Length: 473
Image 1 (cartoon, rainbow, N blue to C red):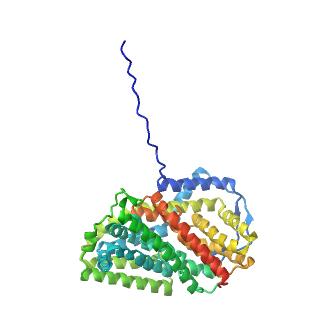
Image 2 (image 1 turned 135 degrees about the vertical axis):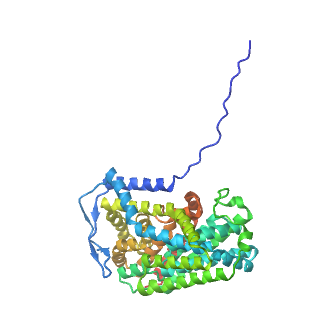
Image 3 (image 1 turned 90 degrees about the vertical axis):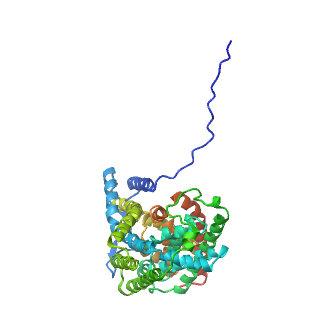
């Protein structure tokens, strides 16, 4: 009798790894969740009045329930489109800033500058470039409020970091982490600290010395964390969170180290320096914003192109490529704004803010101060705009600080902490935009950044406790 053969199927040993959905899918899921919340949460509003600059700010103690307006399916899609239109000023600015600053980067002037630094810092000492640029970009963010303006620098630092033997996360961190810390530790940012102090009735630009101390503390923590990771990757590339992921910005160390740095490249850097100084002056003296800054970036980019001797067609092709590269990130900004629009249509935004503020009134002073930080951090998920968050939260937090015998200056510090650092954490803020520009998967950025975020959050809590102890005003 013939032996019957039994075919044994190979047993599957591999398990599917959890894959984070595409950022568009993730944002759409958050919009659906907020739409459902409009059917569950009670609708409510604060009264609002116009301040001296014409902005509508919340009147503390005026929260009241209003007739509910649950958002339906069709209206939800209308809100997404409205969000895209509502964020048009931001997205158009990002388009222009990225495209024209991208012209400056395409000149290779930055590569030449880094090549010079690499000749100074050799071996492991080259890691000193990381804290140097984190500090410089952080100071720019802290003083004149640059964030979206730094986007064009992400690809160049990603390429430089890879050439130095590190990875794309290090390059992204040098720019995005520095900008976020600059906002969190801002001591004269007119768009966040200036506005928050104005609403809170605190002297504008007061408390600068302690804010500088806070900024320095965060720069140190972030620099140590980033440098340690960079050195670990340099020693063993498999330790990189993006190991095996291709990068379109890859460069060899020879490409950077031997990059020409002649008179043209130096003149381009002079144009950039003159542009930055003009930006500082215009922002401080005349209150320049997106329109004026966009014009300035256009002029800087075109001047740099002419210095390099590029033809009009060459310039146009480079601009076209830059516009294409940033398009996906710009759409993220608009889609994320749909979250805010849904909550506004459903009249639940103020309900969220009121609900978050209620527990603070019954807590001990020190715990309330720390919880203010957590509340502001959570609010940045819903209102990813520094000035927008200020006009909603500060009219509530400032009087609440009085009731809790907490200096209003500290309430402003909690606001800027919560607004700044979480910009590169929340999917509704700028985290997916920066990751998209850097060519880093958002899940891998979170894997690297979340431990650092918790360290920096602990640093912020310590500085808040110190501010209370010294009765910082």
